[in-house]
Amino acid sequence: MQLFNSLTRTKEYVTIPHDRPMTLYVCGVTPYDTTHIGHARTFLTFDLLIRYLRSQGAEVRYCQNVTDVDDPLFARAERDGIGWRELSERQVAQLVADYQGMNLLPPTYFPRASEEIGAMIPIIERLIALGHAYVVGSEVYFSVRTDPEFGRMARMGYDELLALANQRGNNPHDLRKRDPLDFVLWQSGAPRDPKWESPWGLGRPGWHIECSAMATRYLGDQIDIHGGGADLIFPHHPCEIAQTEPVTGKRPFVTTWMHAGLVWLDGEKMSKSLGNLVFARDALREHGADALRWYLMTQHYREDFDYNRTTVQSYGQLALQLRQAVAARGGQSSPLDLSVARDAFIAAMADDLNTPAALAILHTMVGETLNAAAEGRAVEGAAATVRELALLFGFTLGPDVP
Ligand SMILES: [Zn+2]
Image (tube, rainbow, N blue to C red; front, side):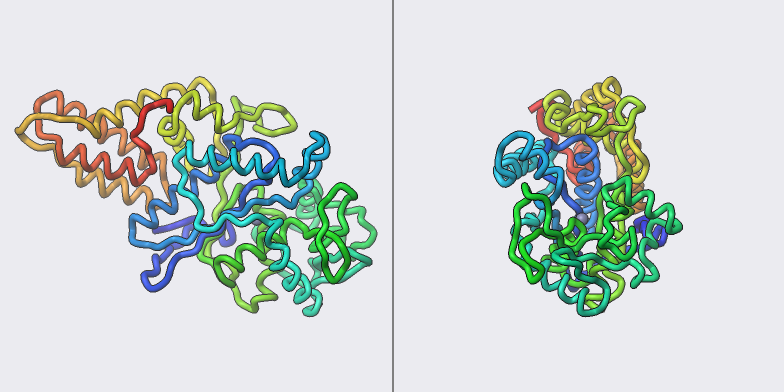
């Protein structure tokens, strides 16, 4: 199949290895708020990728982390007057329920950053020893000047990188840093933050090092595919590359970088600060998994998606027709053959997960099956093909609203 690699900005052929498992790491959520549709669409993209790869004979080892050492979680726990771990566990339980509701395949590994601190410290020590990181008091920073390719994925100049990093949580005024773009590997943290023992005193890791540690611990020094939302193209993923490659001594850390576009709501950016989040749980209750999965994949995953609360309603009808086509019973004459359409569906999925094309083909197959059945033609084979592709796509074929 071909996948678009964010690092090279081209579609590249991906060979499915048959002598080893394929590895996929997807950056997970910070568990302080329920899963919103933006998360749902990102994880749905990788769910489809895994289903497709497995249908082609790949064994996929899939790691998705829980970022439970992160400022927004600690801030929310403090605001609500509960322990951060309690808040995190409650939100992770909701997350798992949302994933199940959407029929998302469970990860092979689902590590929590808070339980992986022991894997992070040796990486930081090695980066210091290699001269890529420096210690100031009880803080440790990565020195971006030691990596001439730092931020290559973002295709921006230094000033643009710094501006974007600042928008996304970087503190350029931290006078302990040698360069305003240097990022934290270890920090003493705010008084409210949980703390762990380290060679630099009690503290907590930075966000980026968490993913380097979990990805390499669970999937190895080099992984096939690494993904997340498009907002991770900078700084998170370039930071992961910069930290990981010197320590493992192996390049590239990741063969294919994949990023899913962001989700808007009725023409506005969907964000916590605008207060216009649509939660997966509510959308599932209202529309069911199949309608939601169909709707969210009507746009290619790399494009931003404008979620429209009126449009999503019409996908319930499509999900119903899909179930009817799978259950269709026609007559005996002139059997309907969908093998050409089936090949076209597979080819669309192999073309960088072209789900709009694949779903258009599936929609036509559904219509042809229902029409042929109404005309008394034999549709047993056609219904089986529709069922096969529907399951490949991860439709539940279950009742509309659970
Ligand atoms: Zn990550």
